[in-house]
Amino acid sequence: MSSYVSPALRQLVATRANYLCEYCLIHEEDTFFGCEVDHIISTKHGGQTEADNLAYACVFCNRAKGSDIGSRVVLTGAFSRFFNPRTDLWTAHFSLDGVRLAPRSDIGEVTVRLLGINHPDRLIERQALRELGRYPSTEALARLAK
Ligand SMILES: [Zn+2]
Image (cartoon, rainbow, N blue to C red):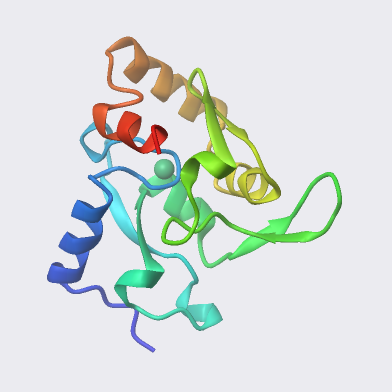
């Protein structure tokens, strides 16, 4: 099974996301390493390289996610899948508390924790962007309004 993403498919994923990481909502222009195409369900777990299974993700979110598809919820120990940017509404699972992402569901909790979204280094980065008026970006604010 190929995980190769063609340039045309990558362009579709990037423009569909408005160049935001679809997990932490950082804008690609504000990242040092850019964004990558994430297989929402990794190929290891049978996910296909097709638009409906792809998301745009910053390097930090994507690398932390790896081939995982979910985790155990801290409070209950039950398995929960990660947030799926293709089928889930961001605001149903997260809210923005300053520069910290506050989970609103089990899906939000495992996603924030496993992807390291509130790691202190990442909060410092987002705080610096916030002070520049870049986090949340205009594109992210549009997503937050949904
Ligand atoms: Zn991210």
